[in-house]
Image 1: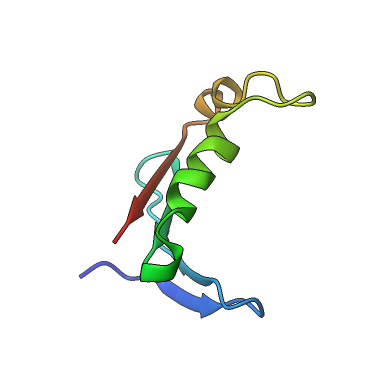
Image 2 (image 1 turned 30 degrees about the vertical axis):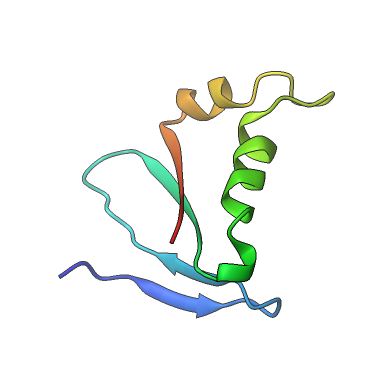
Length: 74
């Protein structure tokens, strides 16, 4: 069984945290579960992986510190 912490932020966002110190990697998973909010995963994809004026290349700095981001819509 994977041990994790679960808590809910004041805005209703549910957060699950699992720490595995065997590999120096970070991973974020974005998930939408509401039928009314099915487009959030697609929106987050554009927000996270798109560039901006202040962050022209988003994924390279994350890869340098072994961060991966995963999203899904259920």
